[in-house]
Image 1 (cartoon, rainbow, N blue to C red):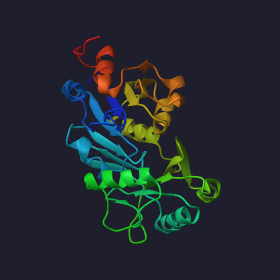
Image 2 (image 1 turned 90 degrees about the horizontal axis):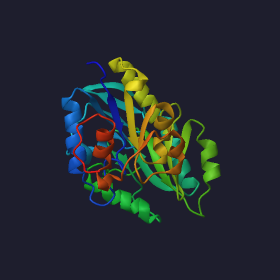
Image 3 (image 1 turned 30 degrees about the vertical axis):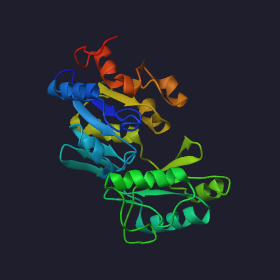
Image 4 (image 1 turned 45 degrees about the vertical axis):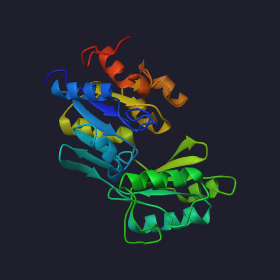
Length: 269
């Protein structure tokens, strides 16, 4: 198809509002129309595959780019897969405890947490969300038989982040603010995921449109030339945004797609 576009969407804060956890109807309709017009729709998320069910229930997509580029599915094909080597992963989770952090070990099949209640309320909130989504393993992270792709960590004044990160030489650390960090194997990002998908489909970079709002979207904003940022967003994205849209709650996805000529205009100005 001539002028075919590949659209890459972050999840939290972009497709999913924080409150309802429901993709707005306007966004669902716009994505459906774009696919019917021959364009490709991809979810490009820091979430691993097991934690995308609430998105998959609400929309159809052409592929899932999961775990910041560690797991890429195009159609029904896994075109790329990477997880932290087993012994490295075992060492890492012991180091996390030693240096006083806590969080979630994110794998494609399941997510793993410590069995005891975390001192971080936000981590307990994540535990509840993962359990509700069916993504939380009944096995805690002290069991060593599994692999995982990345991790999400919380810290406070009792944590030695500098000491931990000095040992994480094979990981890229994304500062999510407020003492939270997303830790991804080096050489993987939302940008590397897009690059692999474009190569797979034989599409040029200018066909890619990215939609995001947070610091873990920075790599794909730096990489792409068509960058849509949500109204509520991390300031790191500002230098790379080519279009600022409304908030997700105010039909921001549909509005951007209409203004960019990807779908017909329906949302009132």
